[in-house]
Amino acid sequence: MNKMLTPIAALVAASLLTACGSQAVKQNDTSNVTASTVVNQYADIAEATYGDSYLTAVALQDTIDAFLNAPTEANLQLAKDAWIAARVPYQQTEVYRFGNAIVDEWEGNVNAWPLDEGLIDYVSADHYGSESDLNPLYTANVIANESLMIGGQTIDASTITPELISEHLQEADGVEANVASGYHAIEFLLWGQDLNGTNPGAGNRPATDFDLDNCTHGHCDRRREYLAAVTALLVDDLKYMADAWKTNGDARIALLEQSPEQGLSTILTGMGSLAYGELGGERTKLGLMLHDPEEEHDCFSDNTHWSHYYDAKGIKNVYLGEYQRVDGSWVKGPSLSALVAEQNSALDKEMKSDLIMTEAAGQAMVDAAAQGQTFDVLIAMNNTEGNALVQDFVDSLVDQTRTTEDIIRLLDLQDIALEGSDSLDNPSSVF
Image 1 (cartoon, rainbow, N blue to C red):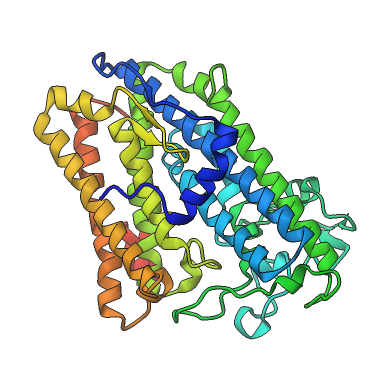
Image 2: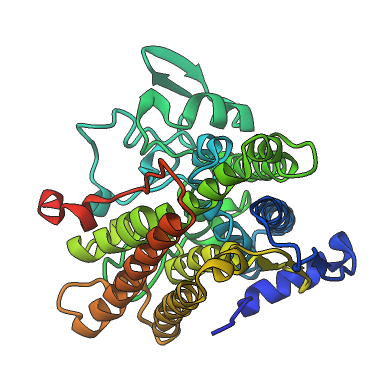
């Protein structure tokens, strides 16, 4: 399988050609494969993927601005399409989260989940409830309230700004579920709650929730403020990380200040931790075990199948030393694959085979979603065939991780601790 862009992503890519320019392949010398050149290529791919994440976020902001200027259903759909397209490059960056402290410390600003959406806006009491023992701000609804009590202090929320969101609302009261910024906050505002459980269907927020002349659910002016502010914050956050991977950027410097062997450890930590503990465990197996759509990563939009597919694609990119940008150009160079092949060609072939199997398993979920069985439907209790598709994806990620561990041993890299997950390591504890 080599599906690089969804149709939606292709549309956004076309809109970015003017911004990006017509770019040729950025081809580093693949004949000089050393630990050092592989680590440099890893940094170049990070620069490209975060750069694309920033550009697609700007495109998303443009469509949201157009929607707020004319809040029609058609313009709301264009904003949703741009959100889905923006996920394509971003999900391919997540392999950089584990092993790079600067990324891990920042990532919660843009991709934290799951969220208690009642912090942000109105919710269905029948489906969501009215209170939580764990979160005093479970139904705080900042859009409906111009002041909030957070940590014993009254917070002025009369104007909703990026600063209010980032400094006061994000993880307010120290509760991780108080996700006020990032892709999923925007997703909730565009789609609204998905009230379909494990039945087909995503959120169905009306465009009139943002229409000052024909307002539904009240507070449309503040809902517009929140959507504009949280989108601007996402753009700023992604620009920060895109710049951090450029020459002399903080993330690239931190990576290259390590020894080449430590750099390889960073790469493999990211590959194994994302595949096993995060994607295979927390984002996939856990929801399957509980048959719970609340454990779905893109739970409002029902876009989880694509997010999982591109998470896995990001791991493959890093191993093969290549990435296809949203404008169609390629970044290619010295790869970890070539470095492994020099020492053990059979192990390299095994890893490539595992990556292909994972991609095929991800594609099977994508194909099922196209037929109406999105991730929340696939994990439903008694959906035997759907559950099996999801389990195949988990199994492929576990197999891939075992091969990653063999590569770590081959390269004699020390002190690598891959992220785990109770859903895989201690399933009985989940219940």
